Every structure is written in structure tokens, then in C-alpha cells.
Length: 444
Image (cartoon, helix red, strand yellow):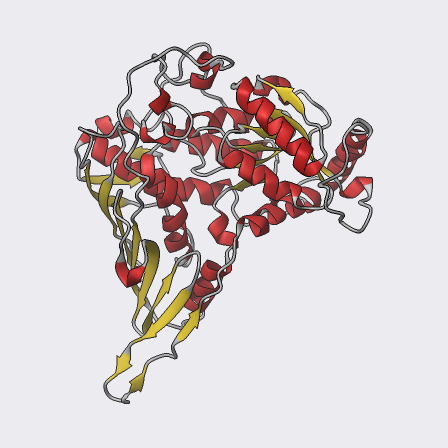
């Protein structure tokens, strides 16, 4: 992907004329002045949870300024505005409508940290407004929306980074390098697991009045109209199909993405075999699954995914991780470490490869965010562009659809963007947007 550096410089030059009221950065001194052409003005859409954490990673980079934040909860807006002022001495403008924020000509890039059902509309609108985008994973809440987002980034020629930050983490980068160099020989299978105690949903609660300061209708946006319930709101919305895909689209996207990375080239799944169930919906409020076992057969190797919400033990003493099983050895990796376990050569009476361990994994968000900002400046393609996000999301959406319609085997045609001989599954490729919101249409 190539972007016009000249247009970008013109845009940032105009932008810097309007930011005199904003101080450059945190109270910690950076030790050098940042030239106007090296500054990037960002805005955050969706301030309550992980989006705000991502914003702080951006603000750790010299020359990055937060000029605006947006949320439909005024309580969140006020709290985050104060935190940004206290921690970074910056004064972002407040918005409750992201469309108004996108009219702000001083903004170069936006962070989208809203619930998944908003990602498509907000990213497409941002691209149309000439903004670059850092969008949290999963790329979207449906298969069809992901394709629209890829098309939008390409058509409007924007830099878009998907928040699959493990692609910037050394404990995953290095194992993939070793695999590509043949360290453990031909890969036979990749086992991936994710066991977390937060994936079970909240204790059931009655519908209640909308909290003061919340524009709940706007929070729902394109999703179906429903009474307010705190379990479908801040913090636990991802357990309901209208807004998210549960643990499968949360940790599943992160970890399956690394398994896909080991392929010669990223491939969409063509056949998916799924067992999905719920163990405690009588005492927990959720729609999404807490237990899943999924097989993704490929010509290169098979990927197997296992997920148990509410369980914290897993293979190799890890609650989550990947095991790349090769003919010479196995590489086991998570965010903290990776290890190489050699196979034994019975003929030569020696290991088929050397053992190796790395136990000093570091936080990867900073690296991922810095890659995005560098690409905003250089107009290069970031490490996790929308097509990578689309494929990873497919590996989560298809098993979820399988479980929802009760079909254990689904076949997917990625070229036609439809399932093979399954109309029930096809009906879940795209959501039905609630009026007045409409699914974006990207020119061909």
C-alpha cells in the first residue's frame, strides 16, 4: 500500500496551525523539541476501557498529541479528560458524536476503542474523512463488515493498524522466524488454547433505568433496540452477539493470528469443525460460548483451538499459548516466554534440533503503537493491516456462527464471500443495521 507523503505533509502542516492550545506531551520531559512536521494529532473514539489504555501508549511517543476524545457516556468523558490533563498536560476537546469529531481538521489519526459492533461504521467514516486509523481487534463483529473495512482502507488510501499487538511481540516474532527458517522442521500441527476465568459473563441482573449522562440509543447504534441492562454495557458487552463474539473473538483472534502467521502465506479457513457449548448460563448472563474446540484443516498443517472459560490451567503450565509441533521439535509460546523442545533422533542418538528458551517477554503494545505512528508519518504499511485482521477475525467468526446455528461443520468460500450450501450460516455474514444507520458501501 502506498500513500501520498506530500498530501500527508500538507495535512499535518495545516493541522499544527490549530493546536496552539494543546501542550505537547506528558509532564515527564522528553529532552528535545519535536518539529511540527513530526507531530501527529490523534483522537480517541470509545474511552472507557481498552481504548484509553491504547491512547496512553500513543501518548508515550514524543510528538503525539491527543486533540479530541469521544464517548456516549459523559461520565467517562469527564473522567478521561481529567486523567489526560493530569498525566499528560493535554486538553482534548470533548465529543459525544464521533461524526462531529471526524469533522475536526486538526486530527491526523483516530483510535477506535468502542465495542465491536461499532468498528465498521467508525473506521469507514474515519477513512472517508481522511484520517488514519488504529482499530482494536477483532476488526469487526461480522465477516461481511471486515471485508468492507479492508475495501475502505484500500479505496481511501489510509494507514490502518489493527490492534493485534502480538505481531509486535518478541516472544511471537522470534518463534515465527525460527519456524520460517526450519528450526523445528515441517510443521505438522499447531495447538492453541485459551483458558481464562473472566470469560463466563456477569451474574444475571434485571433491566434498569439508563444511567445519567449516557446516550444509550447512540451506544446501541446499529444494533437492535433493547432495554438497558448493565450486563450488556460497560465491561461485559462482549458476551452478547449484538456487540461481540465472547472469548472466541477476544483471545481467539490474538492467538489464532499467530498460528496463521506460521503459514507460508495467510490463508482464510476453508473448512471449520466446531464443538461449542455453555456450561453455566443458568448462573451467568451471556449468549456467547464459554467452551469451544475447533479444528481448522489446511494443506500445510492443522490448527486446533481449545477454549475453556472459567478454567485457568492449560498445557505446559500455561493458561494460554501456542504449541507449534514440527518434525524436529515443538515451540511453545505465550506473551511472557517461548521455548523449543527438541524431538529425539533415534538413529543419531541426539536431539533433532537444539533446545532454546526465552523467558523475558515484554509488553508489546508500545511497539505496535509506535509502528502505527511511524507508518502514519512514512505512509508505509503497518505490521497488522486490515487484511491480516480480516483473516484472523474469520477464524473466530466462523466457529461462532457454527455454534449459533448448530452445524458442526462449515465450509467457507473466501473468494465468493459465502458459505458452501448453508443458507443459515450465510444469514449471519452481515448484521442487520437498525435505522437510521446503514451498512457502508465502498465504491468499486
